[in-house]
Image (tube, helix red, strand yellow):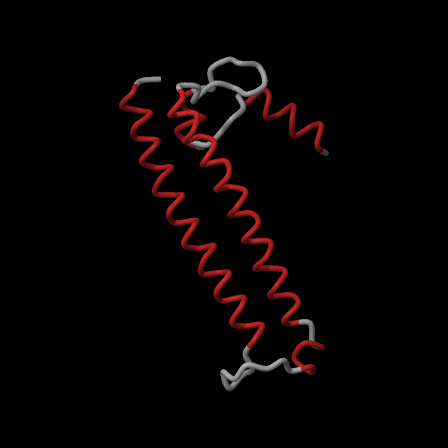
Length: 124
């Protein structure tokens, strides 16, 4: 892969990383505020509201979204590290180059398509 293409993907990864970090912060702040405030904005815990399951659902949804974003951030950070040490674009499993089209579509991909398919089959 050419240096210019890697630089373009790095820029894309950095932008995505910044956006995800902001979304994680926003979700964490919103989740904290929602769990501590009642409908008037005062800090309290309404048992009836909690009993309806709404708070639990919202917390679990936000937690799931946050975990997914953190997982993606981890993949982005690994890809950026690989760019720095010259191992970017190489399959972690077989060591062959990851097709350029795959990296353009998924710049944090760490497996070639064949090995990713094998991984998905074994995880089912």
